[in-house]
Image (tube, rainbow, N blue to C red; front, side, top):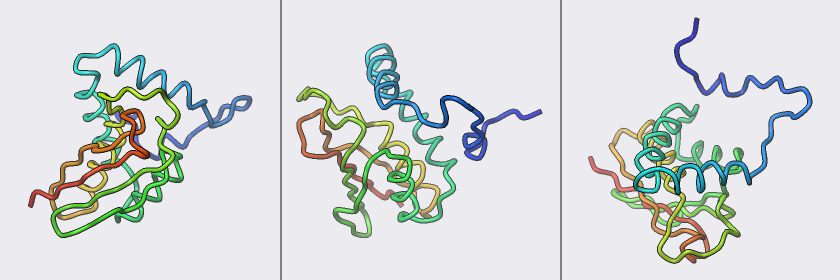
Length: 151
């Protein structure tokens, strides 16, 4: 008997009538009403833990694979804005939060940043931390993440 779910398990979908899609509204409700509003610290401890674990589990071997995953799973359309030996900046167009009301003090895409962090840690030989620096909800034109390599 299995004890843990894997990425491959997530692809085992046998919903004959409803298929393999759920509305973006459901994802938003889980994230922004269920987690962001109901958990301490707006759920950031939970989303960071979850996101890192998801990122580590992805079948990726390069930054390009990670960016491809983001787009294929409709998380958003990522691109590298800038890169040097210590930093990587990734913009995400068409993020899940696009179109939500602006709340100037909020940035709500910490799960996506943590997925990036877990995946980048997996594919690089260096420890990295990722933080969200722009967000549609904050009033920015797109979401953006800064990855800093620590070693």
